[in-house]
Image 1: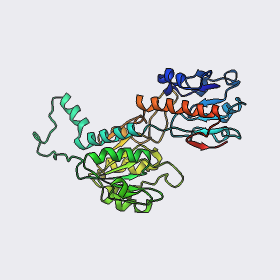
Image 2: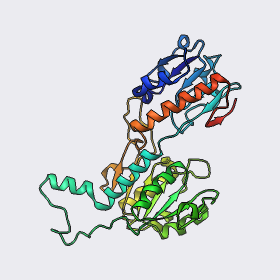
Image 3: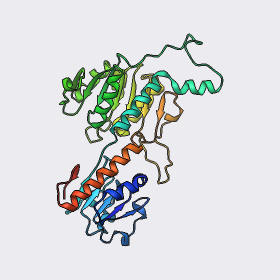
Image 4: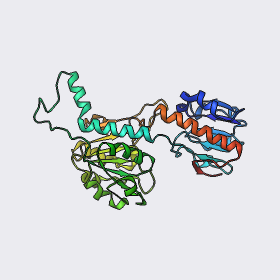
Length: 325
């Protein structure tokens, strides 16, 4: 079986991946889909990568499986999902993202970054030395609302619950089992604003769709309140860009941990994430869509993808099918 890997994030686990694919397979590695030419694609049956154009797929007439190297498949063009080609994805990022959300939330609540910056300039930014600085609250007794309660929401809840928080799950169907997960309650999207009025933290992990684009508006942030923190690990566009900036710069909410943005970088990883100056705000932790990028995530993805390729060779049902051939 001929396999091409165009996602460089898997390269760190090359040895594991090649040892896990079916015996006799040949695996070719590329820094991205742009590095693949037509000769490389001759005889290729599997492409592993999350950005696959229709033109690239068309040059591989024997292609039967496109396997994304992550959960998102929006970079696999509709034309690449032709008859005879199955598209699958993989996860394993939820634990890493949950860890990121918790650490960023604690850092924002404790004002850790500002304290670090101040102490480097010999200022002890603490209520002990400045009575105008309020003593920070721990997470115990606070309430988190999850907008989306899939793999990421559930993994994050396991950690936050251990800190003594209470939880509310808001989903499109409202079908989360509150009792089974130990949540305060669960509800649908039309109950979001009411949930936020009770909450100290909003975790956004709902997929970006026509129904969820721009879902979080100014009135939702006002409901979250001046002590509230927003953590977005879904897609930037779920939260209205201007409303979020205004809420952060105007003190409508206390802070935000933003791992997803409104503009993508160029191929070399450069480019402003927004037209608005989020980088000038001291109450924002900015990360480059990296919350799930850990050794653990991609090691397990390498195993997962290799296992699915084995199923393909044996004629068994594939797992995590996004669109079937």
